[in-house]
Length: 96
Image (cartoon, rainbow, N blue to C red; front, top):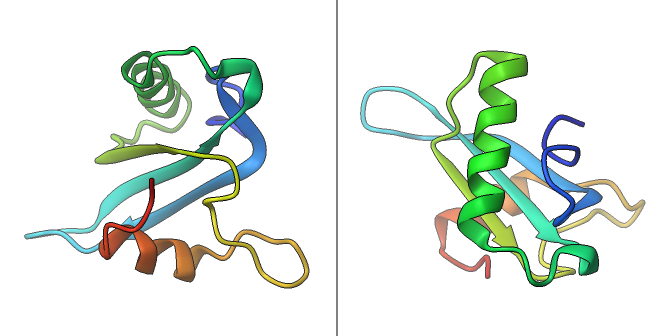
């Protein structure tokens, strides 16, 4: 909820947050689909808004924020966000 309300460019209910392996500890990664209302929004501006909101409301630092095209966040057959598949795509560099 925090991420999708941080900026109008983030598409509602199309956000995945997960922990990615890091050097010494796990890192928070957030992947969000771009919403058509924010097609012209600068990705850096969206990233800053998301990072600030997550820090403010959850006291967590976002290691990486990926703003993807519509349809890029994997979903299960029932329509839920497929976090493991999203993590795998993120680690493979397949999210654009």
